[in-house]
Image (cartoon, rainbow, N blue to C red):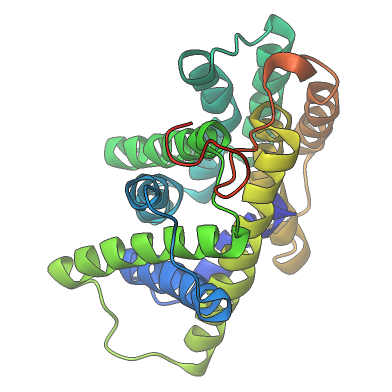
Length: 288
């Protein structure tokens, strides 16, 4: 659900929002995080503040900022393809961070999925901008590293507070960047406000709760291939709302993505152990 909800980001951004990437990222983060904190009204446990700053920066701050930069500087298909490298980054980074050596079958399944995404979204005349490429790669690397650290560190007892504080950290960071760059729209329409609300609440707050819960319950290895559903969902929405009929090559790409996703769930299941380092449960709270 998290990966599919994130697939709505592109169509919402291009049809309902002002073209101010840092402003959008800041509103997305604060609009998703503040309601969660108002609901739970809980401070992080002692020793978790620095972790939340790191996680908020990786999972939301850097991720949102670089994602929107890539979306502006690259064709949507190219940006989506680089974003699909997230599962491969997560699996490879798990080796030094978690000591989990990926099997050749696991890496191969993700590689096939990435190739399928390329068939779906790439076009022959797609332009390549170096800064856009670096931003897209940075966004994929950032959220992959953040997810692995969530798996490694676990979380405090409240999942809502854990998610909310990360989003608020990112919102503050992106607000400062938007103010320094002057990346703020002069006016907002009703459509802009509705789009920002959908982006903040549904595509951000709800999706990140699902994402962190999935990491906790299934482990990073099991959920990594689901990154591939994000560009697949974005492509499907374009097909439905913009009348883009998939070609034969694109249809093959869809089948490859689905096949790699299903196969990836049946290989290397024991490469990662589930993280349950909740503060308040057991003796390990701050340094585990």
